[in-house]
Length: 226
Image (cartoon, rainbow, N blue to C red; front, top):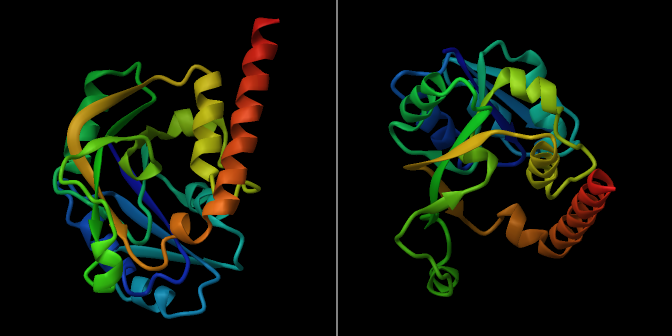
């Protein structure tokens, strides 16, 4: 099973190298790893491009959804895996998930558990105010997902207008379309908490996007019942 790893990157020079290595160090290793630099103004592209085994694409800043769609268009794998440029995969992530998809051909995707961690560069005063537990929890985020390429093509690409909720919008549409998935009892993703997390920085705009998606989902379900 050929795995294509897709990473969208915007101004993540401090973290992108570690994220890439957490993917390339998987056993078995992915067939390819594609990084799309989404108009970074720092050295992110240089860091990514200097790592062997990375295919680097560049585009003007258009958002995560557009970057991942560009990466998916170049991917050649049977399955697609997604990793944020500041997060880390746990050892065994791809092995467990490819085995699960091979064992259950009816599944479109598998998810896994995730846990947050405070980035070492986070100031102590911010670190002290975080509520980070030690237990992993089910992760319905793209970084925990392994998705069959055929399902991605059937369900459609990420909504590029949902700049702060691209995956939630995609997942909602996938569920409406009869998306088949399973949650594995494995810790597969470590989510980095740092000073520039998009979710923390853009929370009001993210909430607005979420509300719009929920309204669209409710309207779609009502339409399906009528």
